[in-house]
Length: 439
Ligand SMILES: *[C@@H]1O[C@H](CO)[C@@H](O)[C@H](O)[C@H]1NC(C)=O
Ligand SMILES: *[C@@H]1O[C@H](CO)[C@@H](O)[C@H](O)[C@H]1NC(C)=O
Ligand SMILES: [Zn+2]
Image (cartoon, rainbow, N blue to C red):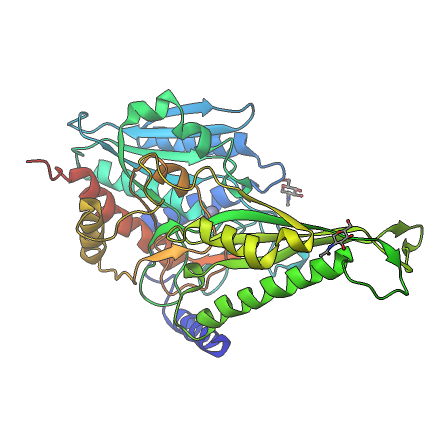
């Protein structure tokens, strides 16, 4: 599996270095790359993203297109930029293109180029935090809209772009608050595109659901005793049994992935995050007392198709039974388990969803290919949209690109970035011209 991945990475990087990257780049494309680099040079990494500079840069670009621009605050000093191009029939549900402004932090010493310099190397690779996740999207949306404006295109449906804060820290003060607002309701959004992920092959990836993030904390109690004594019912003995049982379940899920039967995003992942036990002493821990309590915490990710009662039953009966002095708390970190109509938080990728066929046809028309729709192994802001029953797809047009989000040396090749603008020109045209399937 690792070998295969390396092979893919190797083949994609070798093909990228052999293709001529900069020779065929036009003046317009140079300008588009320059805008991308300027945006990447604004440090919007946590813990204190420079939202002010990012929003003033982006809104200046939007006004030059021109798009209608509004800066909304759902939390002090966390601006959300909403850009709009009204359609000729404002009664039709609109299209929303979403991208987050913030990025995760970096370890600068581990980078081969400074992470906020947006250096473009001789292969055309632009190195910067946010180059893949997901600052490319904001500039691609804007440049696609600029090109469409310049071509005289007139959308039937209104097109909106939301550039939101705080996605990387859970989105509570960002898209989560926006979707609850009157401003959002007024947009009458019918379909949303949000971030996806790079693809090492020449097919684009598309995501129709996120796994739901849960936290699990198991607590054990038991009789304390001298470190030398063998007895039943010690807290940590009970806790270790729980840890081993969960580890076996995790192995089984992982085996399904390793055998290629399920994708990593289609299984339940349950990874230990912390273990807390022992009686502290000035030099570490008291080494001759078996403590009376202990706990262990897990990050749990569940595909939207799995009923959480399945996990609760296993916890009650096998992993953390009360008769072994174990108790647990399992809590959802995201907003909701299902949408407001009680359906799983996922977007249909078949003919039941007319947007799906408009989207896929537009990708083909742009000369692109789509791989089998996937569930995202992690979580994005799209879940806040799906919660309203609004269809949302995760899509970042980055084919033949190693997956580098949140990694050292995150980069994106110039030609891949530029091709993305063309892809969005097709996609935005098709979505905003879609008359709807109402007869
Ligand atoms: C980027 O911003 C973060 C704060 O969010 C800060 O810790 C970091 O030093 C900044 N890096 C640079 C190169 O300015
Ligand atoms: C549960 O804990 C109590 C003390 O708190 C202890 O007496 C008992 O043996 C423990 N039972 C099990 C099954 O560990
Ligand atoms: Zn992202």
